Structures are given as C-alpha cells and as structure tokens.
Length: 215
Image 1 (cartoon, rainbow, N blue to C red):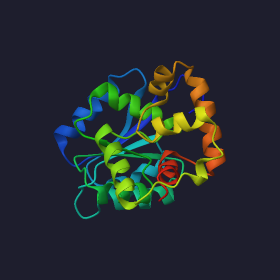
Image 2: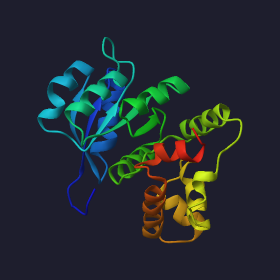
Image 3: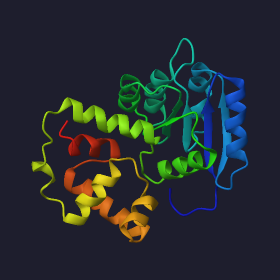
C-alpha cells in the first residue's frame, strides 16, 4: 500500500461470535487497522463485501454451506484487488494449498498473537504473503517431500545476496526480520525481493516457494 495516513480497512468473515468480536477489538484498537465489515457467513460476505471493497479480508475456513476457501475464490473474481488472508485453526497441507490456490495470499492461525496479526496485515498490503511460522514450515516440508532432489538450475541467475534473501523469504520471515538478520535496510530487502521476483518470473512469495523447491 502506498504512503497514506488512512488506516488499513479490514473485513472479517467468521461464524464464531466470540472470535469475531475478539478480532474486531484487536484491529479497532490498533493504530493501523479499522474494521470495515464483520460477517458471520460466507453468504453475507458474497452479498455485501464488494459494495465497498476493503483492503484486507480475514477469512475463516469452516463457515457452513459455503466454505471460506470457496468464498475466497468467488470473492477474488468479484474483487480482484482485495487481499485475502485465511485465519483458521486448520494446519493440514490440503487446506493450506487449497486456500492459496483459491486466491488467498496469507494464511495465519487463530492463536496468532495480536501484534503478529497486525504485522501480518501490514505485510500483506505491502505485497508480502504472511504465514504463521507453523504454516510456513508445513509448506516448506511439503515441497521437500514432493521433490527427491532440490532443483537449483533456475536459481543460478540470482546473486549470492539474492539467494540468501530468498532462503529466508521462503522460510516465512518478514522483510524487517530479514533486514535485521542480514544487517541491511528494510528498503534494501524490498529492492532485492523485487529483483528476485523479476529474475524468477514470479509475482509473490507463494510462487517463489514453487521456484525454490522445484515444484
């Protein structure tokens, strides 16, 4: 998201009243987010969310007749500029990849700490693909299991620093964490990631996973 004083507009799709209210409190009490809509079903979201599209949607998976994953697919077609992040208890590989394939750009667990949730939302609107650490590990492990050998031929075009950043990126680290670990500016990390995506012909972190693990 470009420089702006506006808060990040977030919508919540969650059928559990307690969890929905907890998420609303966390976001509305932050300095960077505000809740635009909160829906208790996918049907409500499909009927009203795109009237005034938010920046980000936090989407549960188990929502009744229409699952959160199917809702993401339908809403992404109607509101292509909205960023979707699953917020769920599910850690199964199948659910993770179905959600990413449907159009979600992030995947976090409901036990994510409040500040980590806010940071993930900021990362999402800035072009990242935030995932809870458990989910990132499962993604990495899944790709490794599917490949007997990691193919690195397509990575030869990267510089040493770019490869180093890519390794950290696919482990689920945020730009600021990479910057701290490598003792470089966060903006420098962004520039390197831009060059990495360009060289690998990918558009986001999820596609970079595929390139990195030869899937």
